[in-house]
Figure (spheres, rainbow, N blue to C red):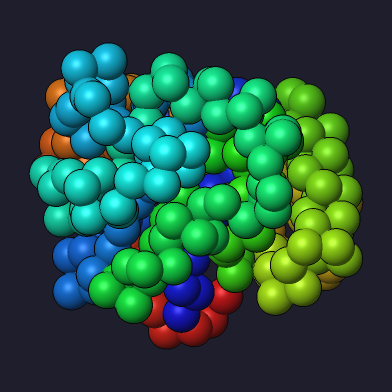
Amino acid sequence: MYECIAVASQKGGVGKTTTVVNLAASLAAMGKRVLVVDLDPQGGLTLASGLEPDALEKTVYDGLMKGYEIGALLHKTSFGADLIPANVDLALAEIELVNLFARERRLAAVLAGIRDQYDTIIIDCQPSLGLLTLNAMVVADGVLIPVACEYLAMRAVKGILTFIKKVQGQANSQLKVIGLLPTMFDKRTRHAQETFDQLKKEFEPKVRVLNTIVYRSIRFAEAAASGESIFTYAQNIPGAEAYRELAKALVRGEL
Ligand SMILES: Nc1ncnc2c1ncn2[C@@H]1O[C@H](COP(=O)(O)OP(=O)(O)OP(=O)(O)O)[C@@H](O)[C@H]1O
Ligand SMILES: [Mg+2]
């Protein structure tokens, strides 16, 4: 199984944070020790974990920039994983990191001390390919790329794959692309199916398009708003099953 997964796409609103929460919840339900890291100044993962980002005094920013001990930054989530939260402070890190030595390895340094306490670490990236996302890809051994099954999906995928290639060549030769995870798939439209088919045609066999399709459901937004995973909120919707299957495939080492 991957020890550290970065969930990334420079496109906003494609289901990164939702994927981190529900994949982590599925793995935790299978008895795995999971840490999730919010690496987005928007704090979406922190919110979805039931915390108020702006009320937090210490966040991942303090670990990255001030050398805070990681244990002091940990929180418990309702879905069985531990969390290192983020808030708007993290926006400063993107600027402040620029002048630091080994600036792309700060997150790796922060996580080094606790890596062996977890079976897997899942990092929620912000929707850009800047220094923070680079930090995630340097510490990760796998990248999972959620792709919303709608117009313009393809362009964003090409961009992030080019970025990953550079990371593999220059900073982390161990990094693998786990695959493209189709999200927001609307069963009622032909457009979603077309986007999915197009994804396969364009990127396979070089990059795998995962068969675990996450169907569109308003329940995901509702679950996030109440700080829960989909499994405690509405576990029988078709979209939830995809995250369970994805977790199983990861544990079995099939991906
Ligand atoms: N399968 C789905 N069906 C319907 N809505 C979804 C689905 N997955 C996520 N959403 C909702 O879509 C919105 C965007 O999802 P999410 O926050 O996970 O995306 P993101 O890629 O993390 O966004 P950002 O780039 O802003 O961080 C949220 O309101 C979320 O609850
Ligand atoms: Mg997000």
